[in-house]
Length: 353
Image 1 (cartoon, rainbow, N blue to C red):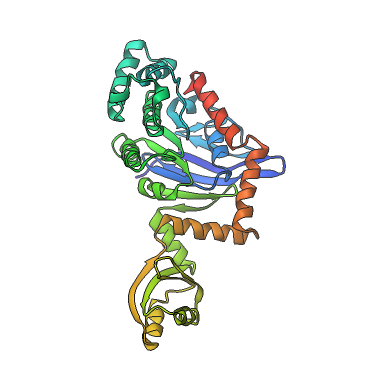
Image 2 (tube, rainbow, N blue to C red):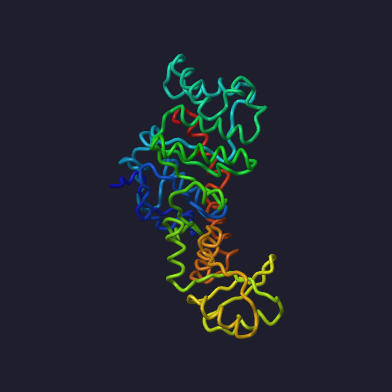
């Protein structure tokens, strides 16, 4: 039976008349990798601030491992590690020295800190660069050292902000493997805040789509795809021979078709309110066309995200740009995206991380 380790109920944060986080109900299970997805300014940083007890919610509650994040922030910080999107270290100190320093700040004696630092450097694949100045590290190296730095306090939960941003493909594969190991082997709970959909799809057990301060969808990626289809959002791609302008007209006349778009590879992307694969096949064959390929869409996270994002804009009576700008405004009026992250780092660097 699964155990809930992070729980928010009606969590809300307002800055004046702007709502940055709106009635967030979220449940994350122990040992899972959960992706909180949304554009910059959607409210993800404000949510992190409230989870770490660095800002008080306007209403609602957040609880981590039985500790109320507002009333027991010190207890929460003891069991939660935070990895920012741009990890900072003392540049003149080596990677090893930075880790030992972090260990001592978190109550380890020198010998124990050195032993743990050595073990973690090996685990994250950074032994070869352990004695180089951290200021010479690439972004990917800093991210791996950042994970080791977080693990120095042996947290139950790790919150990661855009962990794969700006990393080369090989470094990305190594980092994704390492993050999965933290969950699968260690049993740690990982909360990843990101807008990089492809990488999140490779890592996460479940995702939550966050737009304009609201959680508009939550679940496993395949579950979200099926939910869209049950709500009348079907997507298929077809390739036809011969290709001509008549193909689009034939497809657009099929009952239930909402949109037909020609793609770069020559295929046609069709969105409909029902499963029309049989109708597409029949209509094309009757007109003398050969159906080369037909593929159902909607299982990819980028497609799921796009459709939910569009739905959120339609329901709120605004387009995608307005939805994103509303979210950005919410954070800028209070802490601001960058200011919020700086508050997290400042608090965690003062002996509380």
